[in-house]
Amino acid sequence: MTQEAIRHNISQENILGTLIRHKIKIVISTVLLLFLSLLLTFILPTQYEAKTTFFVKETDKGNGGVGGLAAKFGGLASLADINIGGESGSKDVRLAILMSRDFSYKFIETNKLIYVFFNDKWDEDKQKWRPLDVNEIPTAWDAYNYFDKKVRSLSEDKLTGLQTLAIKWKDPILAEKWANELVRSVDEVLRIRDREEAESSLAFLRKELRKTVISEVKISISGLVQVQLQKLLLTNTNKSYAFDIIDQAIAPDIDDPVWPLKIVFLPVGLILGLLFGVFISFVSDLRNTNI
Image (cartoon, rainbow, N blue to C red; front, side, top):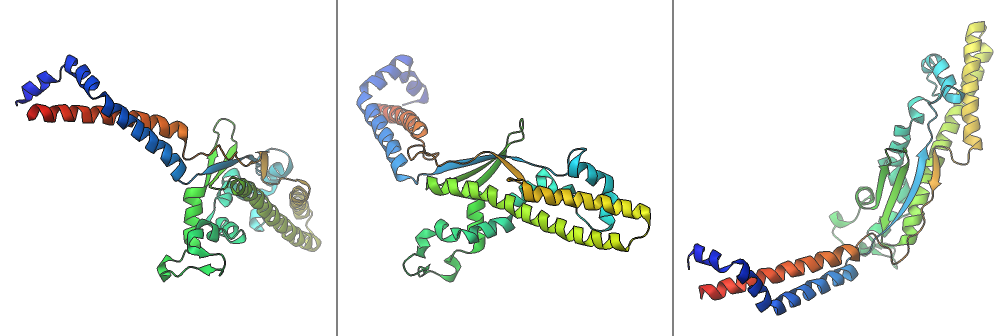
């Protein structure tokens, strides 16, 4: 049969007739793919998402406090190799530390997450990896890659500047725990680091102040001492130091996963089932016509 004849057969009237003749096939195809879509929502690994929303405090901004004093005495501080805020207290640096490989390694090691991420390869009873090829035993790098690409994510609201740290995991309780602990842990790391820097700088500055006889230099050093004292005060008094938590993560309900979503899978299954049913109907008619 020619192509022109085939096109003629598939006219508007024939299309409707084909759909009516093969309605059973279309219904069966639709129900089957709808059922398979529903089945997939139960078979695929369920993932939940817990989110912590926070604001990044910056010590290098403002005309008053540490920011203002840092701007005033920054030149002398740089000569003495003393950190008085600057880049280390900036938003970008603090977020970089939160997402850094170094901190991630420590967090994974502290919480023994390598055994959680690769639990199918870990023998809990014997406390060792199951018999595997040496190259198949998970490493710290494997755990970091898994954590960074599949578990943790960070996003920013450009309008408000708020940060959202999200953790996706199959256990909603663990997702909540990791999301909150990540932010709190980095906040504490930054607090301890800045406290130690301030104490070290104060010891150095007080020593130099005792040795200096030039009044102008004494005034400048006294200013630097004031900067470090304010910095030390912040590390000791603020409950949240670098990150101000706006909304702590909470464990999602067991019936509220982010993957797989029935609201997505079922409509897709319905549409694919209808399309497949229509397709096989026309293929069947064309085959019969050729015969």
